[in-house]
Length: 318
Figure 1 (cartoon, rainbow, N blue to C red):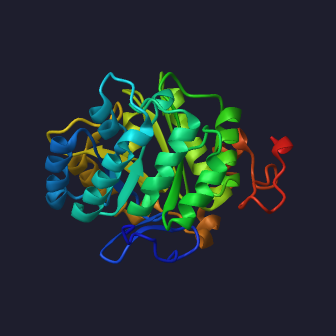
Figure 2: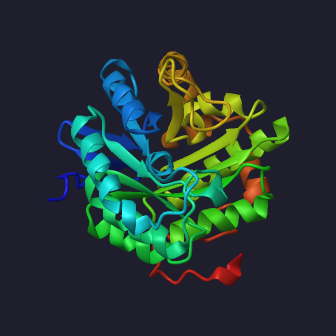
């Protein structure tokens, strides 16, 4: 029987709820801390146990690392280990005190799962019933259909894009975010390696722009030494969530801080009302102020992004 993890209705426009009842969190308001758990059964058991005492909001189960522990260096058809994955999905969902985001990160996006598109979609589809949310790699053939199927299973979708070599140009980032939005994803996530401070700044600009343009949660991550500060900026710059590590365990990407480090910073920055500008306070901005994001990405008048796939979105507008 599928795990009862269908999300509750969204509490407000622009917010997305992952999980239900006592195990739920909202994305799109204050920045949520997501902590990854990974590895084989023994490692997962220890990490899941540690969740009870950490100050995270959501747990990400990196199912690709568990899959890797099952098959090792041998070729094994995904269907042959599907039931093992399902059993672990049940364990994580039942044992975690936090809502679960399930991720099968493939090798082409920096993960440990060597799967073709058909295998990937089949496994994601099967695991969707046991999680509050599911990561869907937007570059996969069939990702739009898969997003619909995950929704039918009762989970939200975090559409994702990863580049471990560098940060794409502004136009490519805009195209990726538009594709995620067009496909109907609930949350838009992109993570890029920063080879300079300028790369990190561009990721923050794209994140803030997408949050305003699409009115849905966005997770923009700049990886590596140059990008580490972007993990701490909070909702002031449009960050719906940030990823942090459990103390004593390895992170899932370069530049992650521990849960306690991130929580300490967010408690300060997101508790400072002076950093917030409400819609009705726009006149308080300095006269002549020009939003730098509009110079890079345009305004709503320059780019009219589709909110849903059926509202006449034209890919040629990009």
